[in-house]
Length: 207
Length: 207
DNA sequence: TGACCTATATAGTGAACGCTACATATCGCG
DNA sequence: CGCGATATGTAGCGTTCACTATATAGGTCA
Image (tube, rainbow over all chains, first blue to last red; front, side, top):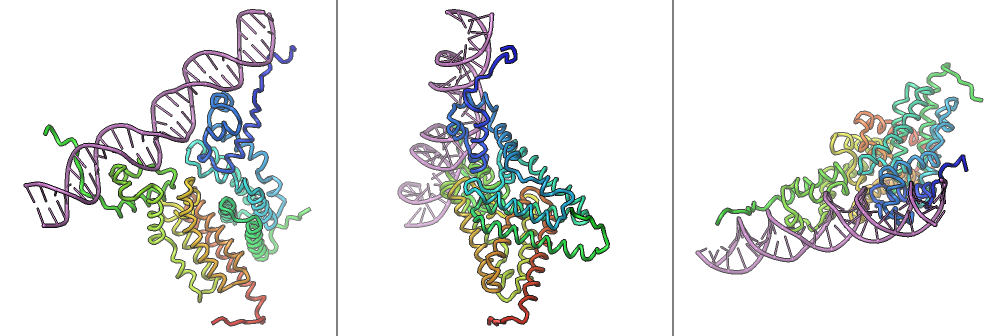
């Protein structure tokens, strides 16, 4: 008993509470989920809630971080620097559409939709996470296609937000995927033309 | 009479009130605008508000109808049946981006963003108007490019929603326009290829 | 055991929400 | 001028919001 000086009694599983909150926030959005909704879903009372999480906004941040870790797109793999953009960007769009439309209840991107929260603190949290994703795309494009980086990054941002919003508004999975395929094909065509124009340019042999 | 403790002003301009509400709802969204915000902006008291408009949701509907009449994109002209889609669809995207990003305060599409209202009645109103726009695009494409109508209509819907969401989240006007130009060029390229493929094919001349 | 400590439930807090009962002020009309 | 109809201001309705003061139940240690 020397090692454990004092054991915290886990009267209720706090991580499980974060998971419950994550689902509720993803399903309905930050503002539409009330304290009463959360405490009822967790089967606890408000004082336990505040002892465990501090505030609704703080729990939202934990829920979004959990979402980012468990559900966010693997940008590191999708946007590996040795991957040509004509392959990476369509793959990213497909992966996004697949995730946004997969679960009929948890539609869209929790972070992207969190940008619309009325609460400033919650919105700021979402903005920080969303900026991370956008900057990852931008950093990748700065390496592989610096001339078109800004335009392509903005096009990706707009398309991803449109996919998330459309998913939230009920566009079926198959049609979301079809739009992602279409946008990906557009990008691939555009990049193919650019490559043809600059024929003898940097030839990065792909493994 | 000690003093006229209560003064009453002449009747206020109800249409002007709708215009004020339209601006507030567009700027902040339905849920983020409270009755206190509305009555303060109109310089009236709640009973006058309810005598004039019935409810917050009813005023939102009037404000969105006003928006649709005054600010909505001229789909009839942009999507005239005799206009080729390779010209009409990019023009629609450009017009949308132009409108969504023009006013730094009234960003995005009021109807599209109204789809996110928590209040069911307000959301239903927005959905009815939004469906009208989508169906106009779909009806145009059914005429001019029936084979690709569904996919192109969905692509347009996703891109328009992405443009509106990105505008609301602060993407600058010039970058919105650049994304719209890019997406429009993608569509034009795609449709040009389709036309080349079916050059000598069955030319079912529609009158 | 019994002091100690933490997490819990009871039962609220004040503020803001959309909305309204009521009395009073203004207007059109004779 | 007076009367009815109407619209407005004062004041407050009931509800819900995020959040908390207080006391107790239950586990951990001496």
